[in-house]
Amino acid sequence: MKVRIRYRSIIKYDEHQETIEYQEVGEYVETESGFTLNFFANGNTIGIEKRDELIYLTNNQATLVVGEMELLNDYQTQYGNIELESRLLMFQHCKPNLKIKYALCANDVKISDVFIVVNIRDGVTGNEIVQVHNK
Image (cartoon, rainbow, N blue to C red; front, side, top):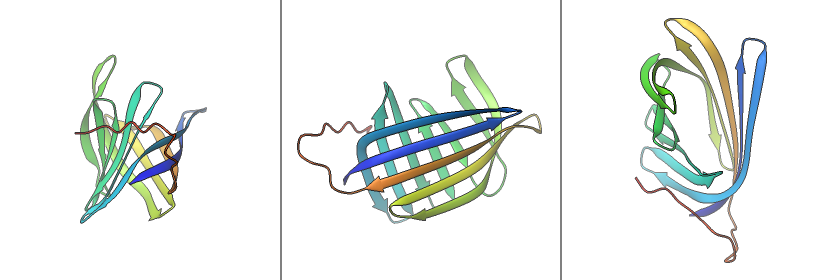
């Protein structure tokens, strides 16, 4: 289903904070084990998928897997692959709102907390361009 997406990601590390925001049109599909949400912003394909107990966060070719237990990820960046440990701290999903908070560690040292808030609204007009990433 085509939807309006308001996406905000807050990344906190050390004394610094970075915020990324998008307002786009994308696709939201409920599945037997969760949902998929995909949209295209600033040349990047962004995806959030919940499958059972795991959440898959995609930015172009890089996918980070987050769950309640600490997971080791081989995360692909423009600078090469980085091994990151991820752990889900909070997950709330009651459409139209989605909230995800997780921690990232490298070599057992916490490097950041990430908080993602997404507002998903139905009602896209026929004039809006929708770009969806197909896996």
